[in-house]
Image: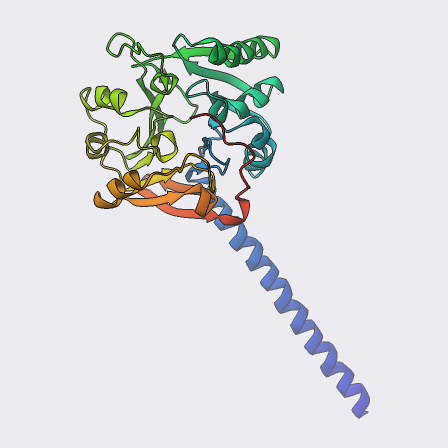
Length: 314
């Protein structure tokens, strides 16, 4: 009798245990769903760790996936592809090349060669022989893979599906700035990316003389500045920094690169301006999440950081 009674108690205890486990599993699934739901309602700007190069990925709640530069070609599979795959995406809606240096354009070349973008955007400029080779490669592979391509200059716009996202082109402007030295850095596309009231400024490798043209051109106020030219002292002048007045500065830079980027003078200017500094060489992939109410959170994935495969251009 006692043995049967104990079995009934054991069975009841087991039922309660598995019942509680089932409830816990349901709650866990609901929690995961809610967290994912919240994340899917956020605009994500990811600054990818591509060594001493540039690559950023924009992901909107409406499903837009936009790449701004892609680092050197060897880092495409190491950084760009995994970042897209995290969103179960293997094709970009839009790929943007800020200028025709391999540490910005190389990864986009790989993307376009594979036919993995619907659209391609590039600066409307004339380049020298080396940069022309990169541009020609991009265009020929875009044609081969039926990728729509366009050249952009000041006052042009890029139209995403998500109407809450606005992408305005601030530079280049051949009518105002004559790049007589054929400095490719000063042909960089400068993009003002705005989601609701939060503004990101992408400057490519723009240098201080071209920055001054922007300073004179109007309102540059931004919440987040992608620091120009990997923190080189040729960029991020005090006048430009004052005009942009960012809260956060992101420096895309390779660990122990041979150029000494970011330069101490630039770090000092940013600190004196009270700007929060984030760096891909120290923080890995940096993701800034925004919504209608502004920046919601920032995540950093140091484990994603890769050793620099190449020094790139400067």
